Length: 336
Image 1 (cartoon, one colour):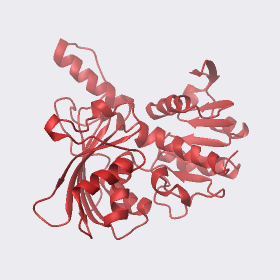
Image 2 (image 1 turned 60 degrees about the horizontal axis):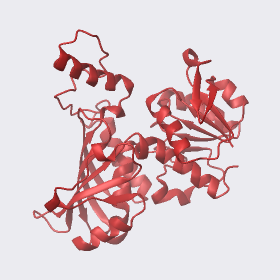
Image 3 (image 1 turned 30 degrees about the vertical axis):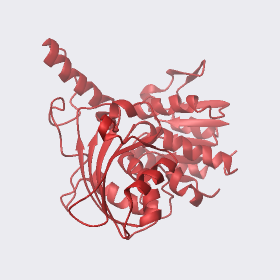
């Protein structure tokens, strides 16, 4: 099968290639696609070198699937052109997520909505994905009424420039180096916490926070779920963490909650407080699972649970989820 990876030279695109190889997706020809400045460069993949091509060339080469990770404006312009050529697009940007005509998919939850006519499929926001994977089995059993979430998000979610800023600041602090480094953020990120991810909207929330609010309802197919979010950037690489407070319509049993999570696809329960065992980004790094722990009843109000959810934002939060969508399409005969 011919597969195109659009944005192949970026942080997420590179991770896409890594995960495609690891999961042994049946690729006959890889088509790495990037901006004009990268065209002609060679990218190694499974023992071969592939030349980076531009968008028009990629369409002419007729891949079965194009996985986009090149930003919203690129997706808005080019995804419809790929789709018009009969190519199935799985898009990692926010461009199509809330379009009512486009499916927003986390395979463990709602892959069943996909059909052969879906030519642009949206990959959700990284922080939304890990939260809904953990909450879906609990919603099915107890019905979620309200979610209060605070995120602690890795700099890798911003991109290479942010990683370089963090490491540059750290190097300067440790070695007194005068080496220059880019500034992805308005403020220093090392030894700091920035309570803003994406731009502020008129309601005082950031765009990232509202993504979590809206995407959760769409993925879980329940507009009655109320979500309020605070998203925060921290000087960490390896994964996003979330403190989640969930109020249910129905009473829950804590032991049953643990059992439901242990049985849930894509979830790993790490919840042994007496042994100081709980999910951390350093342990989630380079893994595909969503890790859940610190489970406890909220003692301030009824039917409410506290949880801590961690996942590698470049993998399950981006690359792995997109490739799992492609795997589902292939398995169901929706692409060939």
